[in-house]
Length: 235
Image (cartoon, rainbow, N blue to C red; front, side, top):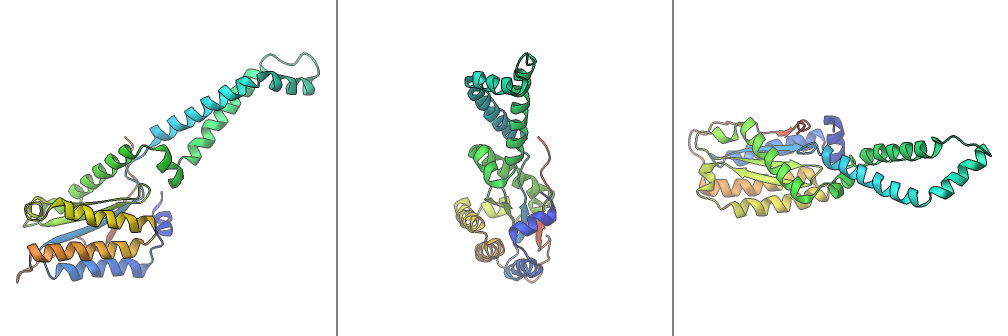
């Protein structure tokens, strides 16, 4: 999914981006903790599962067509009258199955159908892996006090991960981050993306301010704005 397409689907305006950025900046004035926020179109390419679904549907269709092979042959006989080519029936099955594979594979790239085709366990692992990868790529893991957190959302899967660095994990239970992530994911399903990010940032900020209060010197170590990630790499 292209950048502009994702922005359109998320219904994010320039003011929404600014609102999210200001929320991060406001929160970080109260804590030495750092917050990074990002969203991806999807966390992996799921072509294996989409192709598997396409071939499964094509096989089912072939079995059904075989049961009607006599009627299909009779239909061809109406066109040819007599001596129809022997290759007509096999060609019909091949072309039909190939067309079904192409059509279903195309439809399987629609987010709603993708979520049906791809097992939930696979989506869950993919989102976690993508979030962990960006946690490293963005440098959240190397803040001065190891007090960085990543709020990561994946649009197609409608899942959210909040990953905290080791300094935070020693003081704050992961269950609290999971609660915030679950609430965020619910808002993401409802299409309230900008507000969901803001609320998650504020809730995370409250926990950080309580456990990592601001000091006189409080450098900004991470990007404050919402980052739109590229499509995931093939695997």
